[in-house]
Length: 127
Image (tube, rainbow, N blue to C red; front, side, top):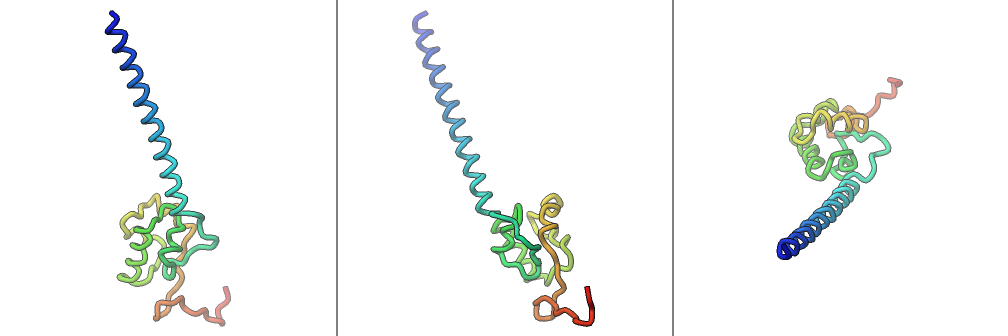
């Protein structure tokens, strides 16, 4: 009986130590993930970003948009030409309908002139 008691105590101590280690690692992993998310998306832009002129750095401020997705947006714009509507983002890998719903209020698509710059406003037309 004495050997069984000693082994039971050792097993209990080992299982408890493993549980605490797992819990500690889980907490650390959670904190690391939160810090990464904060670094990727520090604060949403104050004004909507124009998808046709925004830089990679500006696009990374959008929720759920990291460096790879931001670069993909710029690459898409360079290859395919200017965005015509916000929904065109769905053509980019990593942009889902759910993500688009979060991003849409924070972005806009302004008309683009021939040189790739926003088209000049017509002073005769009043908004």
